[in-house]
Length: 238
Image 1 (cartoon, rainbow, N blue to C red):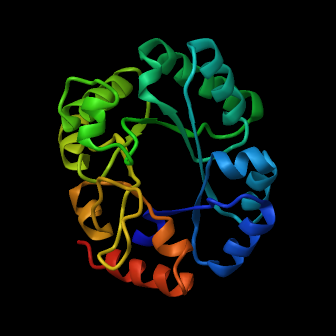
Image 2: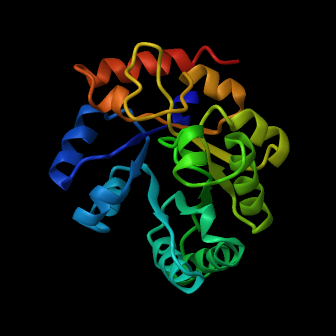
């Protein structure tokens, strides 16, 4: 089902808030746990999601020296989550160390290793910010592509990118490289702080494997109705 491609973030501060959202959207099968909720609850929220037979995207975006990144990935892999993120800007050595560590951690726990995916560039960063704030002398699409290719060469399973870059990454990285797209906004939703957005249907047509759609659903006046509208839109994609 195409609705399995939609990941909804649990961007809330407490487990109680998460439970309320889970109860409000029982049809959602794939949830993202990010820094705010994981810092608040630790692995408790992961256990809760598993009891409800939900898939889990653990989006902690590890970024540190290779030894520290590897240690964090080794521990995170033991949780038995489906997706795990690290930053491409960790560099090639840290990316390779993370790949090995994920396998080690999962083997130690007797679980399937998560798909390890690299953040190419946060979708809140614009071309202007990349150039003038971060002093990167590359055009944004070229930078995202280089980050994704480095991740692929290091053995990662995929990358996180804005839907505006997904077609180029799909063409270059191949059909087996997972592409996860935040910054997805239906026509009727506010863009918020996302600078590089596409609609759900356009993102899938461009080659995305998964869409991360949060505020258009979770902050809607009627989240269940917003979820239904998005499901209806993605169902039209061939």
